[in-house]
Length: 119
Length: 384
Image (tube, rainbow over all chains, first blue to last red; front, top):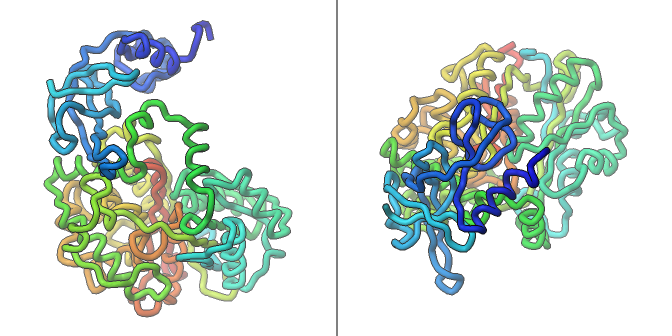
């Protein structure tokens, strides 16, 4: 417990400062997302922080249907980052139903969240 | 372990709409019916098992309500799969001699109860899930929609094939006077109904009802003395690999592959030996994935397998014979109803929907978002 905060706060603080950083295990060298205390791949506890490339591929996608008065339909998807980890996110700048599985996407930070645009 | 414990009584209460009834009252009413079915009262119970999404320390609350001073209490919460999963600790406790008669119960007023939106907001605040909730998935449907979209992409599964699952469930429900939704339903109607989270329409999603269920479990040698023929627990297996959908390794393969294998091994049977199948169908994709993962067809072939009415009344494989969560009852968590329908089929009590000569039944529970997978195999006396 030597770090000033847990990994979740560390991740969110970096995002708030405009930096998208994920964990990488110092023992097995695999990337880890979401941020954790223990490496879920090898069980070791030494996880460092790295900046991912931001490149990813849509693994699956859905359009959440919402009344126009409540803001209209929006995209929710799962993106596999080039580093081999998966995260929930959204693809923006195209209609939600135009997001397709296998689409190459690029990360950006908006309102303290990681979201994606077509690459 | 095989055949060491048996279900001696089952009961339902408040299924559909039960306005004015609290969750614990619905659970207690189901418990009373299950005990009466076994020829018992709450005075005979020395083990209490329950799970609830809302009631804090639900095991204590149920025992208090019934006036039971239990020797064994269990209230593990693994979502809707809980009441299939409860068979594991209950079996161990009975075999260890910790108690003799275990009551497993559930009740929910999800449809007519008040204050549920407010409770949802509190739960979100207590368990923020910062890596999913900010993107506003409409859960649980959106998580199951993501799995559906991936299965369609990878295996060419179609919305029409998924709609066949909803139609088969409805046709079973039409044979069950206790089912909530019994009006005719066609594939076209499923496809044209309101989209919730693509590619799932409202008819690909389970009902939201009130309802409760309960069953009574005891050691096999004691079960013979009760009012009805016992349904023996031949095998059970539980597995989970994730909680949130973003952490599921492969959205087309569930931990049912593992839970099913362990249940089959304990029971000494395989999918070809199963006469009647009860699968946790919170969404149409569930039925398809579990048919594949439990070995009734190969991975990727679920869509073709369910086509042509194969799992509907009169089809080759009877699946979700009460009408399932899609058309019979789904009060938040459905697991206990899988076990109850399996027992009724094995006893030959299922009326117009009875599967002839049902001797081996499989009940498969799902919890979370394809997260917790628990498979139980039950059999008649002849299967021991």
